[in-house]
Image (cartoon, rainbow, N blue to C red; front, side, top):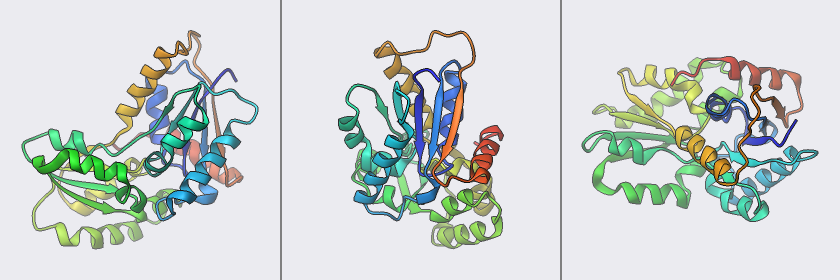
Length: 259
């Protein structure tokens, strides 16, 4: 493997970002590292998320020289991006954050449901986003840990996640939302479940498009874009160290995104 782009997530969710990176830059080499052994990150303290992320990137970097690190995890981005930039000062470190501002600008004073992990919702980065949005939109921010559990559990228990979401949404069903922000990279894999529980059409927003654009710009600026004409390689590693976990990661990679 040539100098790869390391794509990291707390588990399987970052595969939604990985897919879009490969669509945009198919001739790059990629190494995906999912930390399913320690998932979910959302309920953990900032210090725990930072240590787990540093450990994971160090493990993923063994034997390779990455050209960039993409933190395909909203929780890890909010907690760890600056620390990773300090730890790896000679390569670009790109993160992902909920696309609340994009959703807020999509129409005049929309009602936006921003779903994320508890760690993301409580983070300073997310609160800064809400401050920038101000009164231009009505934003309801809700932690949705059941979706992470659903995706990490190979999306087998659909009824349980539907019940959990219905309970979370119940206090806000007095009027419809215009859009839903998927503030965790696991969530695009459950967009159909979210839409089913809401019971009406909504526009979905996630932060992957900006992450992909920032990655492409960072590689171009550092003169690190691949010039090879062949399709790049992809290696998937999971800290759970079980073949079924890696197999499910490949299943998600091959599946069509629901957003």
